Length: 152
Image (cartoon, rainbow, N blue to C red; front, side):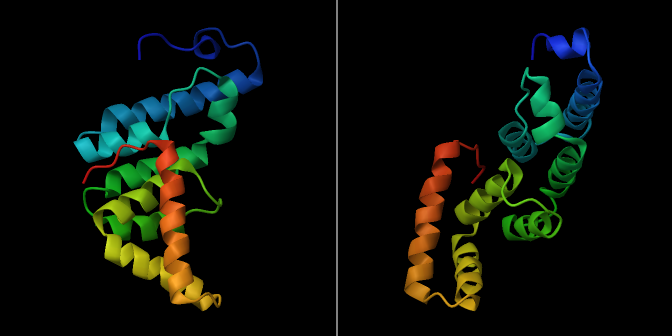
């Protein structure tokens, strides 16, 4: 990052101050906790240092940033599937970049475990195993469009 966004250097509205807090928290997380290549790939894939202040109060709000910080701190200690389960457990929203990244990471590094877990979930809701596997493959192809950086 070369220059700070306009809302940061010249706040004019209350939303700018809230966005500044989120931006500072993200910078602190990057400087204090992002040390390894895996942590860097997770953080850079999930947090985009956007110039728009709306991003920092709606998408990258403090609750989301705290979940990202927890994932960054845990990524070196947990396997990809354990990290995915941790993120899913503490994730009230449906789909965010953090959840998509952990799903793709688990699929890339622990494919058999991820597919069996995914299929077991869909079987619980009545879907057949072959249909569940086909849906899993289709979902993973769809995740490729996000161009997340994954460490094998």
